[in-house]
Image 1 (cartoon, rainbow, N blue to C red):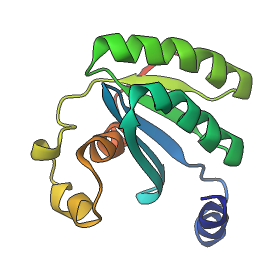
Image 2: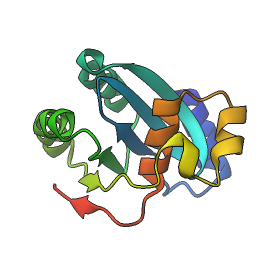
Image 3: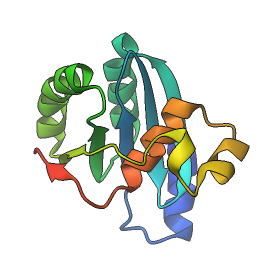
Length: 137
C-alpha cells in the first residue's frame, strides 16, 4: 500500500493524504482512499478491526478517520479505542451518519461493485465520502 500511495502522491497533489472510512458492525469494512482511488480495502470481524487500522497507520499517514454510526454499540467501542490511537498521531476522528451508505442506495454502486468490493468495504468507502460528519477529535 505505501508504494501505491507514494506513486499516487507524486502524480496528484503531494499535500493530499488518504482518508480512512470504517463501516462498523459484527462484520466490518475498512477503506483507505486517496481522492477516489482505493489504496486498501478490508472486510472482517470486528475483533480484527483495530489491529488492521493500526497496521495501516503504521504504514502511511492519513488526513482523517471517518466512522459510521450504523451499529451504535460497535461504533461506540470502536471510537473509544480509536480516540487513543488517533490522539497519539494527531489524526482527526469523525462520526458519520450512515443513511445512504448501504450497497443498494448509492449512484456509485455499479462502479464499486465492478471493482469487486464487498458490501462492508463499499459502505466504508461511502462513509469516507460523506461531507457532513461530527468531529470527535
